[in-house]
Amino acid sequence: MAELWFVGLGLGSERDLSGRAREVLERTPVILAEEYTSLLAPGSLDRLSGELGRPIQRLSREELESERPVLEALARSPRVALLVVGDPFAATTHTALRVAAERAGHAWRYLPNASILTAAASFLGLMHYRFGRTVSIPFPAPGFAPTSFLDGLRENRARGLHTLVLLDLRPTGPAFLTAGEAIGILRARDAPRTALPPGAELAVVARIGTDTPAAWYGLPERLVGIDFGPPLHALVVPGGELHEVEAAAVARFRPV
Image (spheres, rainbow, N blue to C red):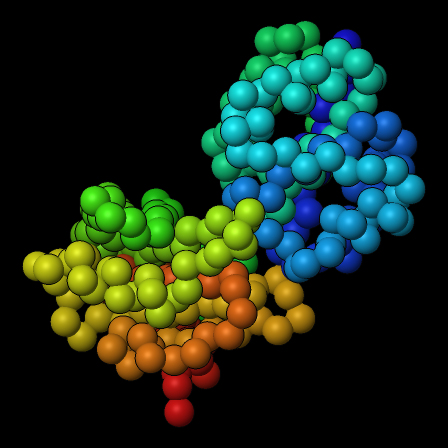
């Protein structure tokens, strides 16, 4: 029986790796990493590989979802680590891999880290328990204009819950959907204006967990023309009236 360690990398760079995680990695012969769900600062994995004195094998989305490279590594080595940007079990794929490892007779261990699922709310000052289902906006493409994220926004708003909106990325590009593009997509596809009613405000967060985090809060027509700087970006759409403490917290993020 081998051990599969799911290791959270956090949101910024290799510097966000916990001390305990570094101790584990120093004793782990096989280290794998995926960056399709999110990305660290450029060069982070290369620097970490140099510090540990061993290679880090990058897995594509297809390789990870097939589960084969991880299970094969577990068959060869008594300990394997999978590095995941953010927190390991924020993505369903990683939980499925955990179950697959168990079925193959292996043990798993979990080293958590910061995730955008909580960090965006914390940076803005919004109450975590007021968030509903997270949604994602994919890159637009000819003949491909999904609106399922609008259903999530409407459902959350009907319950008075905030929505974290994640934006698509293509790590191999790399290419990133910007907050400005996402706001444009949201407004264009929400023709009835029910997901984001007239007068409703939203927030943009950028580079949370790095040395240059930033946020903006206001009407979408005011925010859409702003240069939000380098990725990664995300949106937060409030579920209605803010609590007085939330309103005071986001006030500092209103554009001048």
